[in-house]
Image (cartoon, rainbow, N blue to C red; front, side):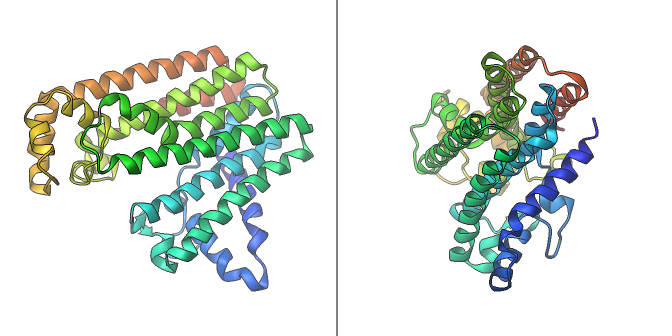
Length: 333
């Protein structure tokens, strides 16, 4: 299946949704939105837009159920707008100055304006979903809205847990899963669920697609945690020092803390210095952090693939779903 055609169609639909602010009085606001989406400004282009994985999952799931993916484009735009709303607000909450190699929205225009950009993206996600009414009966549109709204609630719940965990020293592995279920897995799960709903799949098949997205999200986040400590920087494009220096409560770290060994003793003394990272990563691996995380990732991958097989995606779109899953879960380490 020509995924480039799908990506190009997603971009066109996103631009159509965001054009709501392309008016004489709000042109500067429209510029902020198009900058954040990666279309304008210095460094604009594919590296700045991201891979559009979430809307792609919507369209492939719809097509793999035997329906016309073009009818689901408003939903694909909706999930990507939700994702970008969360990124704008995350950057403010995390005090992140860079996003995909460019200054973040709040750095360029200030925190108050950036909050408004995030709010606009969130509202437009709901408006985009309502555009489904041109292709679907009201009950499907309402059910789609319910899925997306519940997901947004999960995103805020996951973000609350993530931020509230920052100052805690009593966390365990069991605290990790509810947090990433909200922050990472909820939206991927909704993408596949929405795609199956719009593909007019039955309830059982919709549940299989939903579960696939859920476990895909969990597996992806655990793998990201592993790469954040032991990844090859030249391949991943991110510093392997950052997660330990930032004190991130990732799965390997929480598993290591659970052993109450030398790694835990050093972690509890305070912030990690960059010059300590290599030795602490080795120590964490020797005390079981790496093994615990890789075992968990394998379990989530197995569950994701089992759910996808149960969903029984058909045709070229089905093949593309398996290929995308393989690509996401076999990133270079």
